[in-house]
Length: 119
Image 1 (tube, helix red, strand yellow):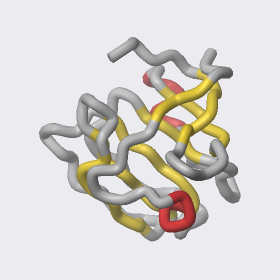
Image 2: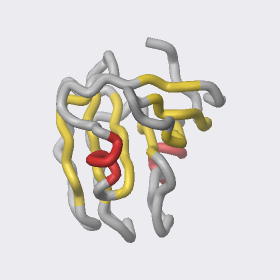
Image 3: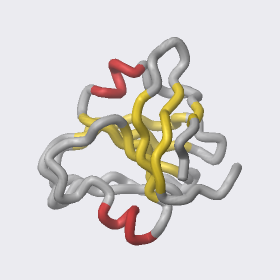
């Protein structure tokens, strides 16, 4: 698995149009994540990450915990002010606006890719 850097790209979904993707791999980018935003367009990939929280967030989000191979192992919708339990096997976390994962077909065992534009 390549080493990720902060940047943007496309979340490549099977049989669906690509989704804008923001990648947060530095400590600072992961710390800020979606804090202070009123919403999210597309998805945010936190890497490395095994758990998240929604304290001080303004909107609910869909959360997918990913293993080393970027396979979705757990999916949750989290309201603001919640703590997501860390997953020992977790290596990455994918976040999107609440309800977006259903539209994208993201679920357990889901496999996806990252397209051009990753900085």
